[in-house]
Length: 382
Image (tube, helix red, strand yellow):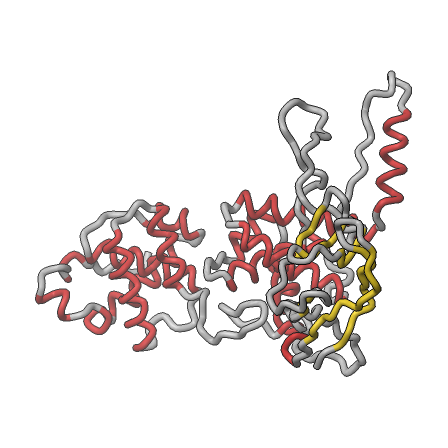
């Protein structure tokens, strides 16, 4: 399908007059060029209501000079004169072209070359929110006028909901930095918090609890899970409140462990195997302990050993069992401090593994002399 544009050219670049000719623009309208933007974290059961779709612009537009009619035109943008000129015949195809190149003047207060005419890059998470700031100087001669102006500007620039959202984003970034989490996890948590705020899912809940639940879910989706206890210690939110917010978000967005914002996954990501790697690194254990410990946990799960125990308890007990098996001494206190569980809990899991040691320790390891079953000691109830 083709159509004509109303854009005309009335004179050559050399000054000679020319009759008005329409500039032919070939438009290829395809079904895939008009695509609605996908929304992150869609609701599990979206309400049946008419929503206005947002369409992308059609990029298959070709500008052809009506004089040359060359299928591969040489269109030149002359920013000095603001004209759009055909480089072959000199026909002016458009005027008042905006110069989009970099600005070579500096507008910075400090010294140094800063040829930028705009601020920082736009943040997609702040879509719909004014991202330009007005900075008022503090130098008012001690009259206090600057403080009043700053207060009035902050009130007029953004609403209360926008200020709360910005505060939540700053808290998410701060807590992720304290947890040494990458920026990708912080972005997922911010995206999830914004979606929950738009849908009014957790109205009445403490913002810190909602933020903690978003960080917990973001860690699970990025396959770097953190336990409830670790999130609670970081954000000072009770475990009960965190669990309520997490359940509400999980049911609303149909979240699955290891799922992304748009694709679901049935693979569990908060098992004890994912915790073993981090715990072993904190305990400065050799890499072989991690591989042996992961195999022991998988074998124990297949035989139903220590079923029903929390992943943290299983990870701590399996590390202690593996350290004894490989004669790599680590005390119960060291493992308990890293895993955040008591020594009695680790000892209980160890006794369950010890009772079924012939099922979870591979015979191949024993035949090759990699492990020694005599290193395992029966630790009775204490």
